[in-house]
Length: 247
Image (cartoon, rainbow, N blue to C red):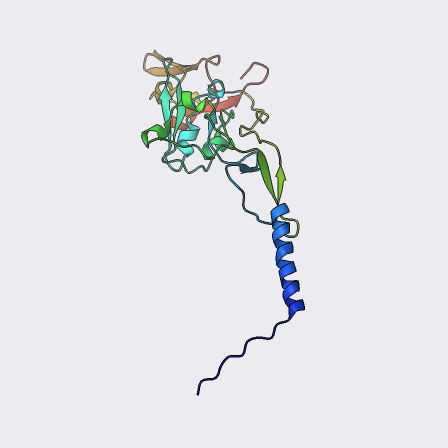
């Protein structure tokens, strides 16, 4: 025997209340949406000043110390020589993991962070950025007119401002005393002249007197990069701060 399912009893008041709640919620979302989704690219999220984005370069500040290339865990930095024999970094973005160890380790702030994170490349080869290209801010076609910021006070909500955020970061350069490589332990020198051959600015010269090799540093040329100090097998050279024009 088949029993028929009884139709639910209609409650007009409850049904009207449910419809009114639905209409009010739709109206509220239409006027002031409660979503936490950002409508990119028409909206752009506000990023911190030290966001690890596309790396920019200021050639005049670079002392060719190679620290960026040595510290890079992904081997993404390649040093390029210019016509004067100075070396400057380029970044392979096919390898770069955006850790910004290079930016943090740069003693003169020649490498700079930016908030640019949506750069497109036409092929893998074009992802290798030379020092000259790093000096230029990438051309960006922006569609955003609203900057969005998350507010975590209580319920998560978005704060929208009709403003366009600057993607390049301006900050004060760190104060760094001038250093030079001075032969403080000359008696340890074995005459290998690795320091002279490795110097990117040709600031170290050697003189041979009988069977003894003497090193001389041109402090006007020396940039304090520390390459000679790191490569010296007997710790002859030391980075020494220049105070009042004297070493």
